[in-house]
Length: 103
Image 1 (spheres, rainbow, N blue to C red):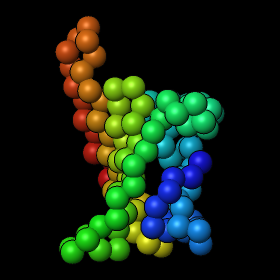
Image 2: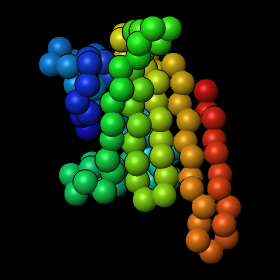
Image 3: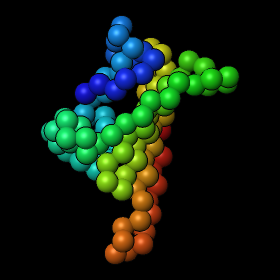
């Protein structure tokens, strides 16, 4: 799957897009990797890409949204994932919010 941006991935692409393996993203959104491509095609997983400035120069933040979950990957320009996190907003039935910092 690709996300428009300033040039990286866990393999940098020359056309200024990022390619993230479904196996990296799926657990953060509590999905199976096989579900990710179809959900992205249906625009049920959406993403934004932000390039770092000042002290974050050379980093890119990729944020993915699905239902009540947000997954965030901070990646350097070589494509190495520097940090990953996920947040799952409250379930209407339980009112609980869960946050995970994975690296």
